Image 1: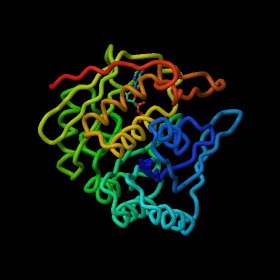
Image 2: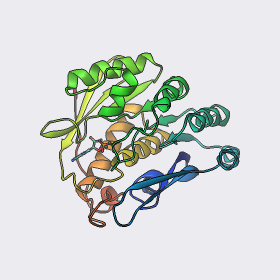
Image 3: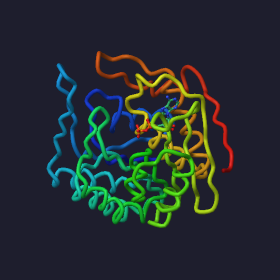
Amino acid sequence: MALKKVLTIAGSDTSAGAGMQADLKTFQEHDTYGMVALAAVVTMDPKTWAHDVTPLPLDLLDKQLNTAISIGPDAIKTGMLGSEEVIKRARQAYDESGSEIFVVDPVMVCKGDDEVLNPGNTEAMIKELLPKATVVTPNLFEAGQLSGLGKLTTIDDMKKAAEKIHELGAQYIVIKGGKALESDKAYDLYYNGQKHVLLSTDKFQSSYNHGAGCTFAAATTANLANGETPEEAVKHAKAFVASAIKNGWKMNDFVGPVDHGASNRIEKIEVYTEEV
Ligand code: ADP
């Protein structure tokens, strides 16, 4: 059977743990055919690892999107888009593609930098992306911004935020508690408009976890393209990224990426689920 074609609209992380590099590696590990339309290139200062984001010209993004859409992606994922204009184009590309799987990773900050990339982007994501999202995968901070609830600190807060984001049009929501939630386990909350399911794994080292968020959303996208239900897709993506984090490695004094191949090559991690 032909491989499912999966397109990411995202930035390039030159250190290759996150961004479109993480997406492509993850798509490959899931036996899908990964494709990219690149919105920006992120480089790092070798001395300080400060991030520098260079947006690509919009007409170049348009050409990539035209090419990719002509190939007929079965699923589309968005990553770091960077500007309202790019967010709008990602939405248009999804509409034109005829694809029925749209996974929105609402990236708001570049890891390593705490500054929100551009506050207008949050509004644009709410208007353009959420109403079409099959699955949206915010971390705690992003879920607080999208829901308007601000700082989220408990599972109960996450439930309220998921309900708000569902009202904004996203079909399925998974809020990543991850390392930001104070807890003994790595918790994520899945919501389908009716029930809340808490997903958990052991919490592993978190020094070398660069790319975890992108990897999780990319795995979710590939799993959906391969025919899994949203709940299965998210659960299996969590298992995949947990192994990637457990086996994360030190690249230099500043950053350590996850090991995108760990789940297939080294070890499978068990995910527990519980309705809450
Ligand atoms: P982002 O990179 O978007 O902030 P996170 O890194 O918080 O996203 O989370 C990505 C995925 O990795 C989520 O499923 C989260 O629960 C999981 N995760 C994050 N940190 C850990 C950890 N230390 N151990 C196990 N899983 C983790």
